[in-house]
Image (cartoon, rainbow, N blue to C red; front, top):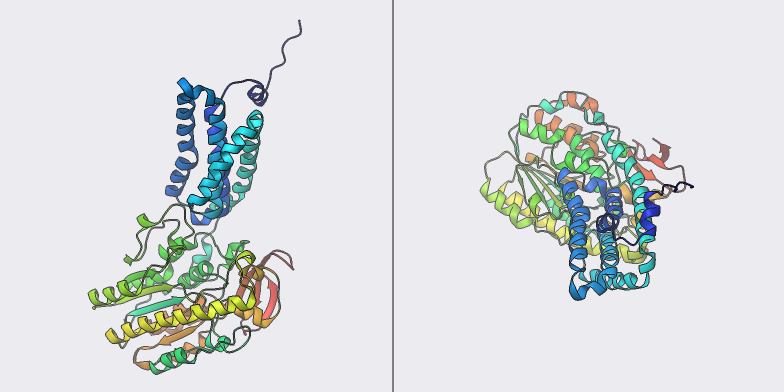
Length: 495
């Protein structure tokens, strides 16, 4: 007698009539979970997020599938039992993919998914087990896609954060209240007048001049997006995007900005109270530990599934309240407003080059209103304040969408539209230090301010190169490139 050939698991699975509610549930949630983590890892890299997503994407469907399968075997529901697991599998699979793609919930999309799941459960019933196998194969692919993302995080070196001198122990000889206001995407006045912008902004320029602000023409950022710029600004060091492939995200940037950095250490060593006020929870999506004493967001109010961008939260009234409550300094405020912002990120949402420029102009007007109100409030309460208005990057005006910046382009107007940023400073007593001529790019802002406040220009010996960097994916070998050199000229040099 010929011995029976031993069958593998999938062969047994496909060729018997048993239902597998546990496996069906895992197949529904595992690939969407891995997909979401692969595409959003830097926004959700916390143990709290891991626990939440495992519970929602895996444990919840396991419970639902097992209970539904048991209940459907009773009474009049028995006729529907063959369709129950397929329906729930399709529903959860597409529902989770919808969450992963849009980073949010929508009743309309959920109703559509419900209808699709019901239809597929009926039409594809006899192929259902093969579909489960396909979902599991997708999960295996997803695992291999996620692995290098996680390994890059685990192997991430923090060496770039090490300071070359003892600046973190700097002792301030003068301790004015410091107000760092960051209007997202606000280009320099010098760039607004020319290039792709050609925008009239004389009223706000005059307002700053009348209130003893000194402006710095041709100032620019070193990086092309909010997170990489701010992590470099608060560490006073270049990170070169950590050799990444996406210039909007850098490893651990949120933790660097709001949890612990060289600037916060210097301020706390000099007994400053620290405040972080922001219109959006963009810096807080991974629920980092707050290194600031006060913040207008609580991590508890931030959803586990979010892009960090939604309806803006007012920062002006809370700021005025803090001014009233904490009249005795020294205080440091980091205030982030999301106007004028930049043009749209995708071609699908684009209004076209002129339409995006028009939208930028309207948003610039809103930014000017907010900056004017903030500045007036500060000067009314604190006339000798150190106020810094500095943007994080340019507005990308002249493009249809920001995605164009991933393609090599040597046009100076194009490049400057990415990096040009406003810098206007209200120096106490109207006396700027002689070395403020060194203010060329954002990475050196706080090193120069620390030298000014400590009256120690030795810290200026370790200023970072005034170079601006971009990640290029098209038109040249993929990588990090120097786009503007220390002299302010457009170049194209691979880092």
